Length: 449
Length: 99
Image (cartoon, rainbow over the protein chains, first blue to last red):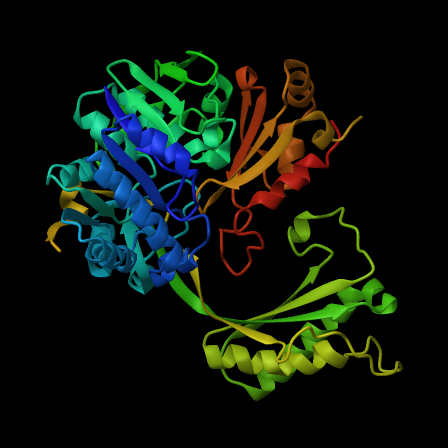
C-alpha cells in the first residue's frame, strides 16, 4: 500500500493545520501538492510569474517543508509558481533555499523543468510531431517563435525519475495535476487505473469531500484500487462526493488523458467503507501507442489601458448603448487621424451585459451603469495615448448636439489604468516524444546549512 | 414551468482548460434528474450559446443525477474578447431557462 498525503488543492490556498498534522501522524509515503493551474488566465504563463504572493507562498511552503521533515518522506510540488514555466520554478527554488538557510536544514532538492525551446518546437512542428487537440487554435512557425513561454505537461514517468534521485523535495515545472499523486504508487506497482483515478479525485484536496475548505486528504493506493480518507475532523467522503469529482473542470466525465495513456472510469464502483471513507475499484488505464505530452504556450498580443466611468443620469442610462456607439465611432476616427499604429476601443456596460456580452439576451438595466473603456494597442504608449483621447468623451459626451454638456462620474484621477502587456494562450496541442525525459530537464542539488 | 435554478440543487460552469467550458447541472434527486434531462434539449442549450448542436457534448449521468454539457469556450480564456476568466458566469444562462 502507498499512502499519498495531499495538504490542499494548491499551495497558497491554505488548509486546516490540524488536518495536516493528523495526516502526518498517519505516516504517508509521500506528500504531494499542486502549485498552479491555467485557471487564472494567460498572464502567468505569458510572464513566467506566480499568482500568489511570495510571502504567502513562503509561509505555507515553510510549513509543508517542516511537515515533510517530520514525516521523513519526499515532498513534491507540480506546476510550481502557478504556471510551471522555468522562471516560476526558479522562484520557488529560491524560496526553498531561503527557508532551508533560515531553518538550518540539510536536504536534497530535485528540480524538474518543463520549459520548451521555441526553435525546437518549430522543428517538431515541421517534423509532424505536434498535433492539435479539439478546439485548438491554428499555429505556425511564427506563432511558436512569438510565445514568451511554452511548457510541456510532465506525467508520472518524469516525476518518478525525480523520485529516483532520492530527493527530499521535488520542485517540478508544469505537470499534469494528477502526475504528482500517481507517480509513486505507479512506481510501486499499485493498480494503474486506481492510481490515475485516485490522483484525479485527490488533485483538488478536500474538494471531493463534504468540507472542501478542510484541504487535507489521504489517498491509499493498492493492487486493486484506492481508498480516500479526509483528514479534516468534520470532512466526509461519500460515494457521491468522490464520483462527482470526475466532472470537475473535465470536459468528459469518464475519460482523462495523460502522458502515455488514458483513464476510463466507466467500470468504477464506489463503496462507502464507513460514513467518511470511500473505496474505489474497477477503473481502467489504457496505454497509448505513442508517448505524447500536452503543450501550453502564451504569447504577448498587445497592451491595454482601462478606464471606468459611472453613468447615473436616467436619460443617459436609458440610451447608454447609443451613447457608447457614438463615442467609439468618434474617438476611433479622431485617434486614427492623430496617432500611428493599430488600436481598438471597446466599451463594456457594467450593470447590463458586461459579463456575458451578446449571449445575455435577457439582461435588465438598473438605475446606473458602469462603462468600462478598454483600449488595446500594439504598444503601451499607444494604448495610454488613445485612452487619454477617450477621457473627454467619457467625461462630457452629449447624446445630441442640442443638449447641455453632461458630466459623468470618474471614481479616480487619472481615470486611465494601465494594464501593461496582455497575453493569450495559444497552444492546445500534443508533442510526441521518443522517451519521457526528452522534453524535460532534471537537476539535483544538495543543500547544506 | 419552473426555472432550472429552482428545480436543480446547483448549476455550475467551469473552465476545462483554457479552450473548453463545462457545465454541470446537479439535480439532487432522481425525480428532478428525470424532469431536467427530459426538458433540456441539446438544440435549446446550443442556441443559448449561439453554437451548432453538434459542437455541444452532452452527458446524462443518471447515477449522479447530473446532466453535463461541454463546449469550446465562447472566447478562449483570457483573450481580449473574453469577459469571464474562470467561466463561472455562463451557468446563469442555463439557470434561468424554464424546465
